[in-house]
Image (tube, rainbow, N blue to C red):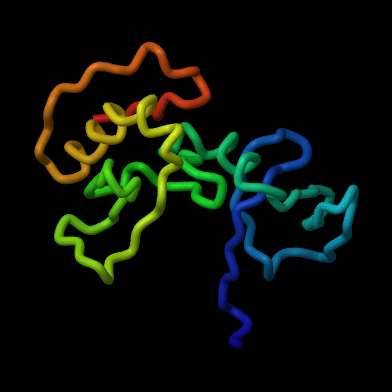
Length: 146
């Protein structure tokens, strides 16, 4: 590895509790506090994310949504929603070999219109969808900026 290679990592700034991107080449040392990795750069400390739920808290406004226990999905990249299979595809021309993420069936009813709206934006086939007012706020999809 060359010395000018950058190794970027998304972390939480310990002082501001905001998401930050650090270059691991700049890290002086790494410790563990409360079972969490802590990256020290100068006098600043940065925490590694411990879970997808914690990561969602920081990335929801950037389009990432926890749609199933193991899947934090960038909704801005979803190109097709297969409601019957509970699958979100990232290619418009998907097939059996295409990459996909699953969505928990219990969430489908609450977020279907938001996902369909995101797909229409992502594929430039804009359609109007109303927000599902019955969905708890934690299950409402972030709005796209257009």
